[in-house]
Length: 283
Image (tube, rainbow, N blue to C red; front, side, top):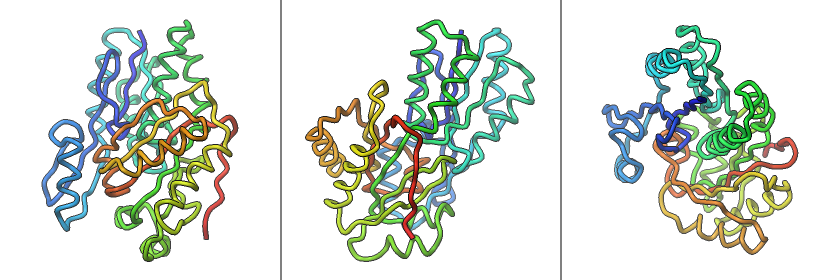
């Protein structure tokens, strides 16, 4: 049996043979476990009604050790697909946990992605498993496809990313200009980049749709839309995508881990492109 482990930044839920390790979120000096004692709606309610800035931290290695020990005891295989190492130390925690458990059938993957980018990889693992591929073959294929996962998101502000240390003050200044709506993406190393800025939400959505069309979607994999709080912009994005003949497989609300850094009113799209990602950075 192949067991799958993800962290809660994936915005997935625990399921058959899938374990979700909660990230930690601190707001107003109170600690929460993402998805355990802090729901998504409750988080955004707090976020929009407090002046405090939320802080996130990776799961402790022990939380992963406990799962890996159970995998080892049962003689199963395990694929752990973690939040991008360019955004968090979660991947390194999983590597450390594997070393502690000392079991060769545990494979740790740096997704270079987040939220439903991780789900796409998990779905791919499940498909390959059904096809009878070995765990080694599955890991090899996932490693190849992960750099083709593409995320474009429109933000209301870059303040949250900057305050969380994920972006420079200069980039934040650009995003704070009146009605300027920044677009973010992840580069091949899973780090946040700002490829452009748009005047207003309408142009921001048009930019995202144009990029999706130009990037040539690999239709062997699902395309998802995501949002933080409020679905209005996401619904507009979905309608524009559908007009271009692009099918949306589902919509997911981004949880506290990523929501802490992108803020409310964010929206975006996640898919697999046919070719490797090339990001031109806005200067």
